[in-house]
Image (cartoon, rainbow, N blue to C red):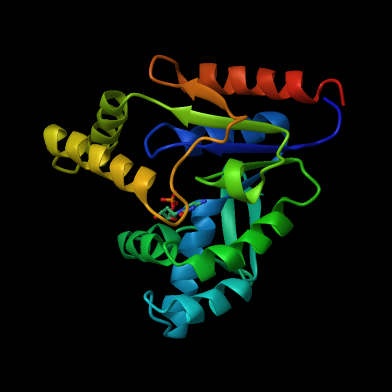
Length: 226
Ligand code: DC
């Protein structure tokens, strides 16, 4: 393949974005920019600095000063903030809640826009997260909107919870995913929409390997002539 490019993967929760983005980055030999991890890192850094998750302006300062970097350690994309490995800490349930609150503040999103663009500079990167193909990298060479039926996403989420030994109510899981879709699509700040030039990929009836294979082929086709 010729010049390394920017590849974006957006889509609703449960469509397999993270797994697909990771495998695709490995296959292409690209870096992986997990934008959700950036919002999580802001929530964690704010908590450590005593900044409230409701204080948009103070959070924007935390976001602007965030010395974050990603690095592969074996098969895992590690996240460092000022040389502190926060890969595990940012996945705590409390930080998930914090990241969700933090991501709703427009000043935080504005501050992180610059940061994400700097981290993606030079290409050779798979960028994963909502709004990456629309707002953050509108000129990305290859954009994908990964989706799956709400039933399939609920089934995967239920299986994941069961595998972790958690009690699961399949009906409630389906209902939650529907509600989240509705909220995500209708919110004022960064609603979930596919970029007009994104390739829509439905993963409902495909294995992870099949999806990654078809995305890699699509990237090659897009950049082949460059
Ligand atoms: O994908 P995730 O769970 O790691 O994302 C953490 C939070 O950040 C989640 O509430 C969605 C939000 N987010 C966002 O608003 N924009 C992005 N590009 C990525 C994540």
